[in-house]
Length: 230
Ligand SMILES: C[S@@+](CC[C@H](N)C(=O)[O-])C[C@H]1O[C@@H](n2cnc3c(N)ncnc32)[C@H](O)[C@@H]1O
Figure 1 (cartoon, rainbow, N blue to C red):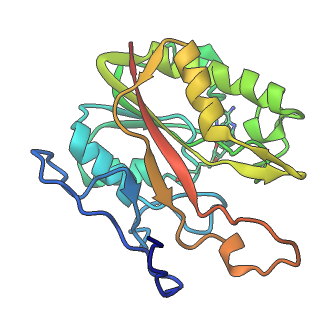
Figure 2 (spheres, helix red, strand yellow):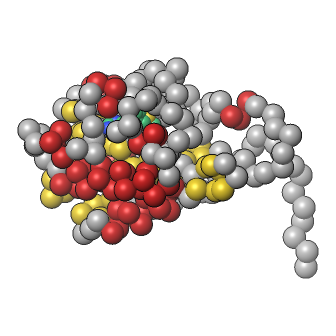
């Protein structure tokens, strides 16, 4: 029997039912779709994300300390302050290279690390050659990103979680599956997914408001993966 054809309803996406669980954040599932970004960070900072996914994750994992080594406009830092969770945050823009192990020397251990790196060169964050968005090739980006992941892994507490938000995109005609490559890198470095990956719908994307002459399937999400040490 043929399936009935559903009428097209642009802009309306039906969500699956959420099972009842003992989760402290019952609405946190593998799909995160919140239109508002909340009073966190700065929406004008290119490539930033809203704060509600971070807030949900912090309420779920209840960390005693948080590290955000690519802080950008400070979305994660602002959420931590609201929740009164001690947070350390830095960025290359303030001179700290997350790929350099020296930057972590005086730090303690962290229960939760929020890592929101450049999606390679989708957005250039400056001229500093240490910036991940300046990597000339995908291989160079992955080498630099591996160093950041290793540094973060080394400052995870025993119950620590390293959470990485990243999205794939089409780079000069070639799809770059950054979430997949990130998972491979992290697992090669002794990390393991701690739960389902979370698909975050990108509401308010600059590219969503553009029109294009070419035919392609628009990407409207990025992927958040929570890792624990194996
Ligand atoms: C996607 S943005 C992060 C946005 C951030 N979540 C916010 O709330 O605005 C990526 C950030 O990584 C930073 N970055 C790139 N390479 C870096 C490096 N080697 N060390 C530290 N920060 C770096 C960039 O300066 C940029 O601010």
